[in-house]
Length: 396
Image 1 (cartoon, rainbow, N blue to C red):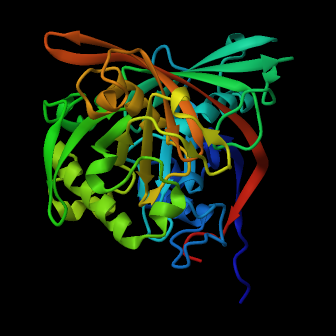
Image 2 (image 1 turned 45 degrees about the horizontal axis):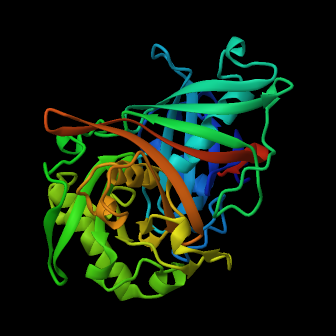
């Protein structure tokens, strides 16, 4: 009996910011995978090469890190004043599930270019030369992202001289605006600060009580002071990821923070919600050498931040976590703001394992509550490969 041939699906492999993933047009997916559910998740797991007990994703498109185990689905938007809908799936490396609970801020930079190239944006909105403003509905969290995509000779301009720490080569700059980034569709308590406090006492069994800022902006994030958990804020990936006990402590902080934020109903649910919330630790500026060998001077940054994604210290900084950092830095009294010196600010430069990043946020206080109208940062994006991705037929 002959084995069934593989199916092939039009796809584009793209880098966005410091991440990369497989991009699909919704209508190109097999019919069963065009709607949310098991068929879609099963397909994306197979595309990326998960679950893989070897944690290498050799038999798929994934790169065996949280930054490279990602999928994106884009379609024309039916919402007023939006061009496209963007859905992000964080694919677990070693477990059989896709986490749809949050956005990827890095890959957000690639959505506009992908949409233009694939005919999902009205041609009248794309200039022959200049900047195309692509209005993106982020379907995971129900928020608007505005991408400013450079265009040359009627096509997306991908090359340029914009440098982004964590990405080896320069490319064209894609400025992003994250509008009203607080409070996702799940609500996370319905507020930027789900607990109602800028700083909480977070009790974590086996670790103790930690000061924590728990914020929902860009992505739900738990910030703690580096010194409170035995770190300086200058750590690189090897300092954390090679230490199973360190990773277990950080996961415990994340899990109990998620419970405190109301994102899960019991601590056991944290294991099935790997993508959100994020956990990060902050410290005042200090000199260090980034993973590339580039020296980072304390005088060039305003604080240090290290963040964990999918159970590992991130090699740079997640884009959505950068939104949370910029938002928290703009609000006096948060741990992020205090680490940055404590004064009011509309932008902050911080050090991460690969170098530095600057992010802005417009925060205002209304009736005693803080609101952020937008967060801003720049990324770059480019197509790495395009054509078809091939996978065995379902059940094979």
